[in-house]
Length: 303
Image 1 (tube, rainbow, N blue to C red):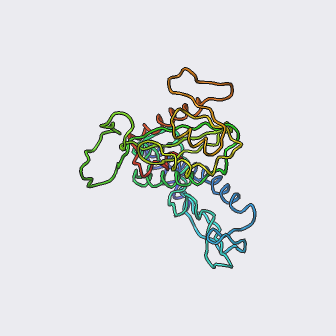
Image 2 (cartoon, rainbow, N blue to C red; image 1 turned 60 degrees about the vertical axis):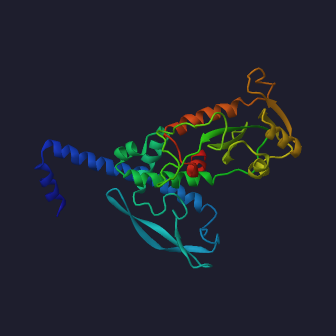
């Protein structure tokens, strides 16, 4: 059908239908233009030192034809590469959260929904993608963030633990355990095996370590295994009154300052744990939006 004929058919539509058609075109074209900078940025970052194979990390890769991808109303051609050493092919999106995503132009809108703290069902209504698909998108994104790590802390390091209720949310056929509504609460007072210990450490340059290190009370051996490689004798630890922290700092030869939870001695010059405590509060508020997070996924959310 020629363009002239299409225009004549559009003119026959009612005002309401013409408006709906206009909204469709505007949304499709905006999605296309918004996603293009993302693809360009990914390509530039991955190949800033030349074409590198995502499988064997060889630099002996060449362009190997193109493939088509549909974005909104347009079909785009994107570059494919082939490694001369291992013989495998790859694209700019291989080993990224966008790999094999059929709706890449929806990702920016979805990321904005995550930032705003919307539920998957509300995000599904807003960007017109099924909420089950958004669940997998969320975990692809969180898994990618988890890989963005740092080597060592610098200067003063504040370290403290916080606790989340153990959860098997989403699991079926659980024996001997009653389901809890919207996160629920522990049936025991204080710290117990029903709670998951999360260690948070943060330096003044905002490098942050957060990870699940077990159930129940914090254990010194697990402490060293998880965070020991990131601490050096040049660091000064600010910790709370738990004995495990003090024993660990002493054995590792780290200068440290202890702050009790009674609030009488909160600051000693530059040394305090107020930043990490504030981080705990913001983290709990953000996690609460999800009405309980399954423990097996908690590390993803902590990232």
